[in-house]
Image 1 (cartoon, rainbow, N blue to C red):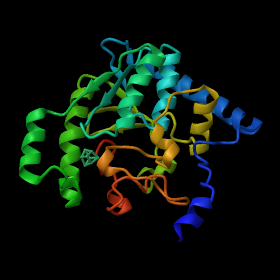
Image 2: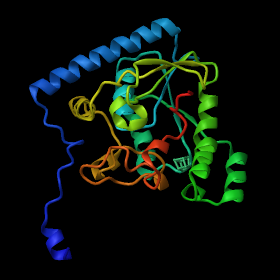
Image 3: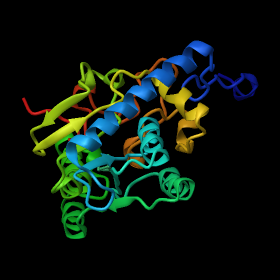
Image 4: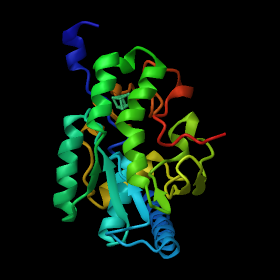
Length: 259
Ligand code: SF4
């Protein structure tokens, strides 16, 4: 298309970040957030969490779903540890959001970093962008930058909370509200599993929750900068993650079930 014509064409509305807040949608979000809050409070009671040495933790990756859970936990002062993984390759917008979240809620997040020696060894052996070369090397990079720090973050916990939704991808279809994470040896709670993407964004708009600026640029799912791209209208919400791979391989290992 000629550049002049393309410049005249209005940018398509980003339906994910501009939900029409109808009464029905507000009611659905109100009911689902109340149910999620009940589940979180039951988890606090069951796992005896407290904010400083909590046995119950929430893994915050700063995606839209995770911002809903961050808001539910921190706005209600629930004694749940909120932690995040900094892989060292996050987009600048995610680092901005981390600071914004800490200011907005007046709360410091617990951030885990990869082992520096392991990253150095991996990069010297395979190259700085080895994840593009094969699925194996991509998974190895996720192993060093995400899985090992996650194991440390989960050590000593009884349960962890995620913002996963069943509708996010083929690898998450049928996701239960609660499951046993056999790989990490603890319970895993997915309070938003039955939420739609529209409900997630409606919650964010209604409650004025901070979110990643990349979402306004057609990034529905955001991970590390070199492994995430914007999606086109109609594409699967996870299509921008590891876009060079088949959908069946697209998990980083954080949420893979053992068979
Ligand atoms: S998402 Fe990409 S850069 Fe980040 S840990 Fe995985 S392979 Fe490495």
